[in-house]
Each structure stands twice: as structure tokens, then as C-alpha cells.
Amino acid sequence: MRTEKHWDPELYEARHSFVWQLGQDLIQVLDPQRGERVLDLGCGTGQLTAEIAERGADVTGIDASPEMIGQARQNYPHLKFVLGDSAKMHFEAEFDAVFSNAALHWMLQASAVASGIARALKKGGRLVAELGGKGNISHIEQAIEVVLHRYLGEGIPAKRTFFPSVSEYSTILESEGLEVRSVQLFDRPTKLSGEAGMKDWLRQFAAYYFEPLPPRDQETALENIAEELRPRLFHGGNWVADYRRLRIVAVKP
Image (cartoon, rainbow, N blue to C red; front, top):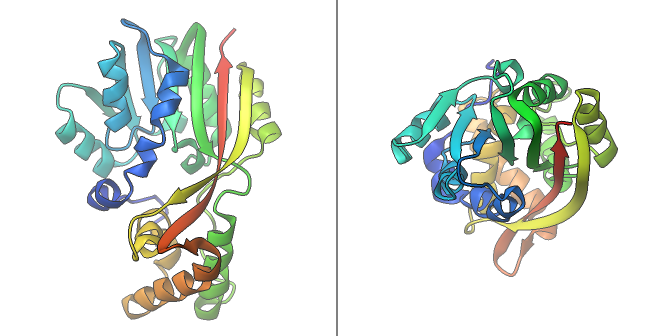
């Protein structure tokens, strides 16, 4: 069974544009200045990387997914995108800012990533990031567990996400020499696209849970999970994912 996360850029761009659309106000927090060097960590297909560049910054996007980096390079051939593991970055005091939207919760080696961020920043540089926080998608995760237990018993794949609390993530950053300036954990109910919105979300962001199932059972399991969630997360004809976000600003003293 695969251990790495595989992404579907076509599904991501067609059905999950909310990921970068909801990240636009995070760019306001970043407030990139002309000539600044910015690292977009977990850049995906590059939409926010391009917005940072439009502000006049010299921006580099990095992502561990070949599929996402390939699409980003196709979308924005004039920008720089690097395929790389964020836990093994070798940048040394190169950037005025590190920006990350909806990506750090996929990076399970959180301390190694924080260390790489600290190394990558110049003295006085800043981290501006938003990720899934404690309690993120709790209803969705519960439904996945209930349904897949019927098929797999105790053999459900382990989670491949990291949704920290305020204190947990602040401690990780501070232990790597970053100074946390502001942090906020908040609910962000997020509308999904169409009647198939929940199944599309599961295919994109939780596909690894279904890998142990025979193909004939995967679609049935998706249907079962959606039905399990319908009373809680389907409102007024729309699916609404139970997102909670952790937004943090830190600096390198």
C-alpha cells in the first residue's frame, strides 16, 4: 500500500478552488512587499503563489507532490516552482517570509518542517501560515471511522494529517527558534460544490483511507460515509465541511 499522498490536480482545481480562495485574506496578513523574497510552502497548483508575485515579491513555490508542481508549472510558467520535501529543505537565510496556506497539516514531521522554515528565513523574517487546527473535520473523520470499521475492522489506515492545538503548534515553532507573535483557532464551515461535494472531498483529501478496499467496495463506502454525514453536514441543498483553522504569525528573531 502507498504511504505517500497522491493528488488529483484536475479534481482539486475543478471542485476545491475554495482552498486558495479562502487563502486570499491570508495574503493580506502576509502583506508581501516589492522585492521581498517569499517561499510559498505547500504551494499546490500555484494560485496563491501567483498572487504573491503580482504584489511584486520574488516568490518560490515548493510542494512535495509531482502532480501539483507539474500543474503549477503549467499554470504559471513564468514563476519558480520546486519539487521538494518540506521536512528536508536546505534553504539557508534566503527568504524574508515563508507563507503557507492549508498545507502544513499534511506535513507530519512538524518539527523538521519548522526547523527548515527557521533556517530558510532571514533574521527578522516572518512565517504567515494557516492550517487545519484541533477539531478540524471531526465529524468527517468520525464518519470515515464508523463506515470503514464495517469493512476493515481494526485495519483502518492511520491518519495522515496533523491538526494541532494553539499550544501544541506554538511550542513546535518556539522550540525551533521562532517567536510566535499571534495565533488564532477558529471555526470555518466551508461549502462544498454540488450534491456530490462530500464524495468529491473524500476522493481528493481522504483517498488513502480507501486504498485497502477492493474497487467494488470503494464507491459504496463513499456513499455510506456521505449518508452518515448528511444529517449533520448537508444543509439547504449544500454540503458544508466542518473545518477549523489555525492561523499563526511568527518571526525569526
